[in-house]
Length: 122
Image (cartoon, rainbow, N blue to C red):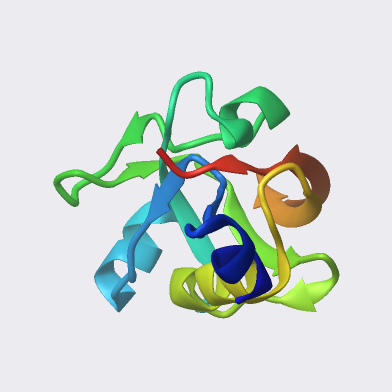
């Protein structure tokens, strides 16, 4: 709110990736072993997530539009992530463009911490 009053606009923090809710069939097709988190479906080329090395799936599955092998975001700054909406809510409430966040992702079944510098949503 202070930035909106001061500047007359609000700049949203931006990761540059997309995710979607996954059903049981998708979770099984993607080979995931958990039902919570934000599965990375797409990464914007040149965006903050891409620059940090976040991966979208590239291996086709039996589910149209869902490729296996992508990162599953399970935590953000040490806080569990249950869904993409939860991740976005945390960013909008607590972060600004230029801030860094640590995403904990499951990559090939192993947890990996990735530091991302947030951009401004286009």
